[in-house]
Amino acid sequence: MDKTVLITGATSGFGRASVERFVRGGWRVIACGRRAARLQALTEAHGDAIHAAAFDIRDQEAMQRALDALPAGFRDIDVLVNNAGLALGTAPAQQADLAQWRQMIDTNVTALVTLTHALLPTLIARRGAILNVSSIAGSYPYPGGNAYGGTKAFVTQFSLGLRSDLHGTGVRVTSIEPGLAETEFTLVRTGGNETASDALYAGTQPITAGDIAETLWWVANLPPHLNINRLEVMPVSQSFAGFQIHRDA
Image (cartoon, rainbow, N blue to C red; front, side):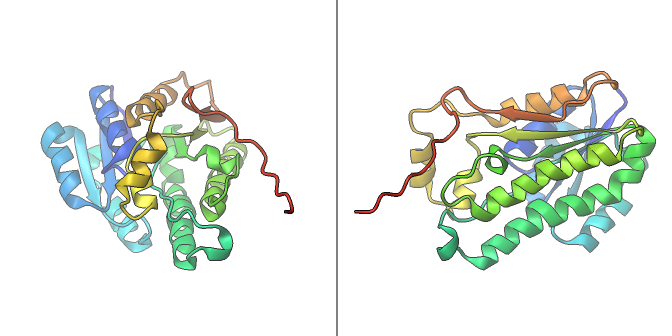
């Protein structure tokens, strides 16, 4: 293999598992994330196959510096995996923290479109692929999902819009939409509440980070004439939520 993938949010969860999967498959990997120590551990484990780029995805200038500093062997990016993202808070909208809403929008939406825009010329030249990690929360609302679900709905629709705009370029675009997955997701969302995280996954067999890494690997390696537009993935233990009904006392 002689291909390069850039993966955001590479220090944990889906991102870290995807870094390891693409390295095993013989790809060069640009691993992006905020936590430099974790990125360093990845490079120590996998050597020259990985180029680590430590920056906050919300910082456009830092992002551009990282892209400008890519070594020659990592500049020809074939696949962009927009994985970095987060959910914050579980409160209903009327009690939600506006700062958390803004952080989700800055990370899940603004940073994603900024990086995608910066890499489009390279991806078009390489006839590459854009794999955006969205969520079933973008399709199925639930109490407390408010701004997070809105950001993921944007990611899904943005992916479809890219697919339309890039028609004829050979660039493939896919929205990957996982359901219940056991990563650091709930710990981040609840501010480190391990009890809440354990309760969410108790008695289930959720999606693992490795499951999504395998999914991304499969999509990235499809024949170039095939495009997966949207791919919704749930564990068997999860299905569509029912409608809420409020009844007066």
